[in-house]
Image (cartoon, rainbow, N blue to C red; front, top):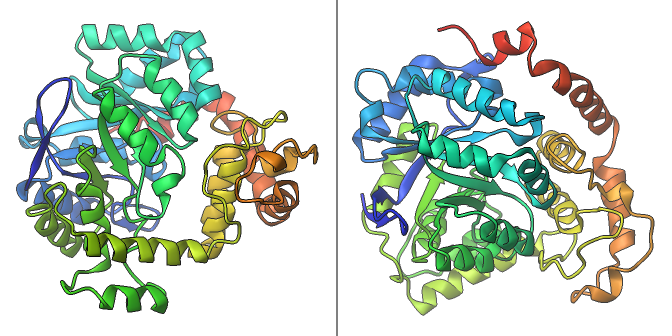
Length: 410
């Protein structure tokens, strides 16, 4: 397993980490024994960083890891988990969640503690509640070693958050399709220039870039002199960039661990040839040709005076046509943009003022396409999920149900 160096601390970490959001499930719960065996097998193979969060597997991921890392395994790994800012209503809540996570994970400290999926508006709210003082104190008293944030908005918002606190690390969605969306390549380079360790999530877009590929993409890959699996092409492209510190993979099968670990043995930075980069560019462009809206995520249309997160609306609409999974796409849309995790920024908030149209380098009819997004992604499921979350979240924070559901006894 190759390693890279955390810029600020000079600590050595493996280039491959284990994302614990897609563990083996059975009947709606984590299947304990095969998942524990998988995690421990990965550790033995050198995957010694594990990433989880309060909400993963409906609150089961952290307690599971606390059990899986018994018998001396905790001492062999670094752990990252995340503060669910959308559940935080006060400075005291921050301590409640962190202390609860220490209990769930059966550990005295978290190596990397991230503010989960924070954006421009939610970061400002968290700052007003005292999150920077909380992170400083948690580092000082030893509950966390390093502080970071995970992110799903645009490049400019990302840069502002990077500059607003002395972070140690960040976690961004980045892959051959998302090179220019969300934080993107510019954000990756900006964070690296500021000496942040940059961890990568969704390197294979939830596995979509690795299996059941469109025939057009298979034809492009077949032209390569060196034959590689789709997963290897996507992972090598990431590791070829020296700014990438670690790639998190949501592995749920021994064969995936073996394949990823084998790739990570030889994926040196700046080792791909110009011809190989051309193949990857052709693959990415072919994927993007399946997009419904030709949005590059450049953010020139932002900010919308009525709060619409235009690039994110188009990104999720495109995902629907590129990868299917309408239920998942609708859920992510409602959670991220419908006010569950932060500001209300859905497509239907557009009033057709057209202030964005002249700013769009792609010449997209933004109001017209946002209407399509609203019609497709704001149906009955969206409204049911938003209403349920609006009613449930304030109640959940301190009730017996909340503690029973998310702080299970072991």
